[in-house]
Length: 106
Length: 106
Length: 106
Length: 106
Image 1 (cartoon, chains in turn blue, red, cyan, yellow):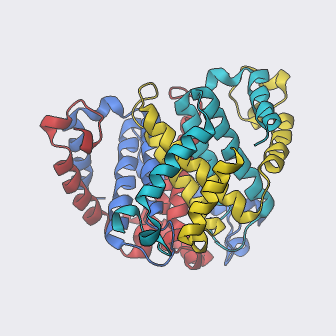
Image 2: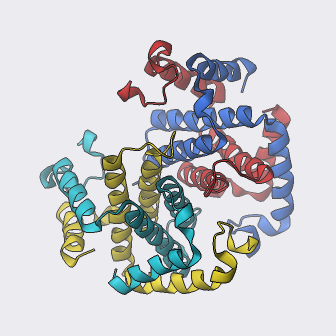
């Protein structure tokens, strides 16, 4: 995201004084709740979905992820790169290519 | 995220030829599953949690969100700004300040 | 469930003195976490799944639902019948037959 | 649940011809979505919640669990007892008493 988009998310919370509600646990619940609303777009069909609705719900998940990064003072590139290093080890290309199995089944 | 972090996520998927599994519906399920693993860090306590574990699970959610943006060809700033415009309308500062109520209860 | 199955669930919690962790909020998180583990059985395919794993995860959801009924002193038949009355009103047969739409789209 | 409550759930589905939408994967999504709506009752507070709303959302989870039992032809007592046997082995009383740790941390 661009810095001005991130700033807008932060200003939204600050203007409403909502930091008081943004405990890490409450934000984890919120990410999960919004992820489920995104899933609801695909509840009865994998193929037919309302793209505008998907965009809104995906945005909600991303906004709460940003709130959680802010709350915990985390750097998104740092945590994502650390996890990608794990993923690359757990799913070596030669074993994982063309397979959807979990790493402990490869 | 920095362009090189996003590129790393994309390369990870491409190298394993996993685009075939990344239907929008499967990615929605995946975001929800990882969000729940993040929530599990707070299952029995809101105050005591393993920060390293939280970082890993939050990173997983963010990676799958990037996969979904890519799959649907979405621009993150565009969808987040569109949603923030909605949120700003639904939660006017004078009504929402210091309150955690849903917009239809304000 | 048979009374002896429900008694076994209750005894499991009592023997471990786990009622202290079973706040309604923690049980709601737990139901959601287990529901997500059930969903994980279908993460990459709707058709191919491990039935034994599905049975275990579905059982976990049901056990935590029973814990929540117990914690809140609720009667399962009472709350399900009250909700079914709502559902029957929201989804009249003549409108909802053969359609997966949400009630506000019927 | 009483047999007549279970019959009411089954009749609801049959009258609307909704078995066509009730694939195991769709029911797993539905259980997860409803579990998240239950969680939403506790999004910003663990202590203050709307009991009537909790009852409705918990009932929704239970109804979809029954739908899944029916779809897969499962006996609830059988799967719950099998899982309780596992749980009793994974969480021996002498180790797990008064502790909320996961079995691999005991």
